[in-house]
Amino acid sequence: MILTTTPCIEGRKVQDYLGIVSSETIIGANVFRDFFASIRDIVGGRAGSYEEVLREAKNHALRELEERALALGANAVVGIDLDYETVGERGSMLMVTACGTAVRVED
Image 1 (tube, one colour):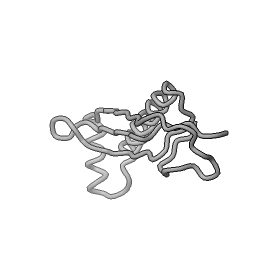
Image 2 (tube, rainbow, N blue to C red; image 1 turned 45 degrees about the vertical axis):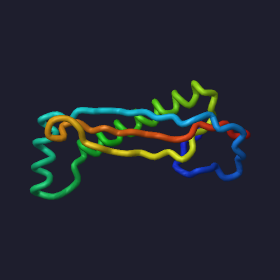
Image 3 (cartoon, one colour; image 1 turned 135 degrees about the horizontal axis):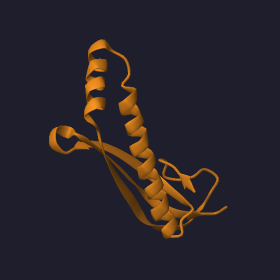
Image 4 (spheres, helix red, strand yellow; image 1 turned 60 degrees about the vertical axis):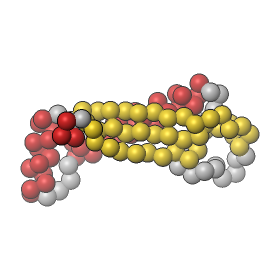
């Protein structure tokens, strides 16, 4: 399965447009991660625990997007857009949405 943010795949002709596919992932942050991230904000540096949560949420959303495209008979998803939002009380949860067009491209 090819997943890309571009509207086409170089060297491959789109044979069929199968529809829009989307997925959503919501992951909660925990109190300890928040505490250590706030310390990191004060002393500087990267918040590795939050970066890992972002990667995990993005990967889950893309896996789910791929599953939905496969169910339509696609072998690629083009034009993928990823969006990150905080939701919940005081922004305590991270939501990642992925959306794209499921297509069948020639091999």
